[in-house]
Image (tube, rainbow, N blue to C red; front, side, top):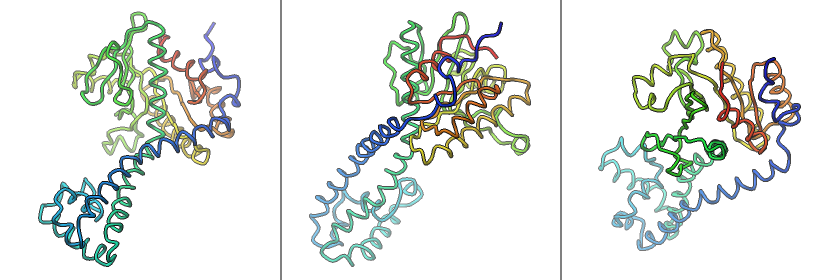
Length: 337
């Protein structure tokens, strides 16, 4: 007698997947608070710039204040990436033109004009951080559930540090925002779970002919040891061996209902690409989806895919029972194709 599909441990129907109003509201409140925290350093920079620039009696005097030259370049619209392509003489020319065209016309309000333009440009950087918030939150939340599952089971594990690229023992407290993967054992079987990896096997036929290097996948579970990934040659072999992939998943953490359908379309497209690529190699790794904002129409579609077997598992990121069940499926049970 075959075992029940894993999703039935926490789902009874599509309605269980839907994100509730209360969760959506809490998500928006948390996002607003986090955005303000992210904005704090930029506000302090702007206040500091205003104090330092206030020493200048005229816009041209700003050129003599050595420790705000970088800020002047920022206010002029030069990004950090652009700086590496410019020479020192270019810096001076850009700042002079910026002062002449924008600060001098502001008259005695030139310091305020400088600060406003500085904040305007720094806002792009803040915007990028905010756009990455959903993905960061989602991965952070999943990581904490995985750590809890492994720890409560008394199962030793290693975690992959992003900065050093080295595997660390669970005895060293994991740094969640610098964690790129886990390794553990299930009985005598070794498991490695990696986040955000470009998988060379995932491509359509046209992309394969064009030499495409593959697509990035949010979550990849391998039948392998962590030390194999420390060896670049062995790691390439693992990535190129379809039988070593046990499960692949998409993680979409956005909480805004307005973007939910678009996130699902992106996630579903990725999952369909995964299934198609592996089916051409006669392999059927488990495929799963975790979403933060799941509307009714999405839930109906996901439930249909679960019932048809196109999806092995799915969970709402904001439902504790879902996440405990899904991480137990990933971490505690032998996963076979």
